[in-house]
Image (cartoon, rainbow, N blue to C red; front, side, top):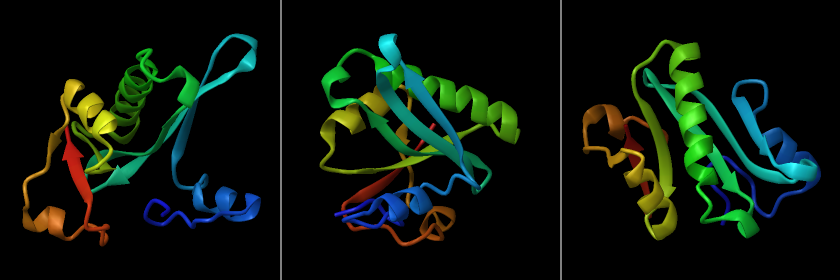
Length: 130
């Protein structure tokens, strides 16, 4: 299953289209010898810096790369968008990601009318805010 608004299975063309590069600011972390470490995006949603498409190279997980990426995205996004808070969506069963986000100060968002007005999400997806 693909992430909301990201077609799956994807082709090279649909992958590029679904990244929404024209409306999202993208970050890439690159290591030695130009090895891709992580990728992430942010955009403004409901007066928050919303993080999206957070991906860490599977062979480099557990090294703190996700924390580095998320901190950079939040800092840059909050400054660039002139907002105080950050948000993201995550699948409930992605326990490693949920744990990492909680360590960085994210909490599951309360079920408020504002949150209910967000685009329809899969049943097993939660909205987290910081």
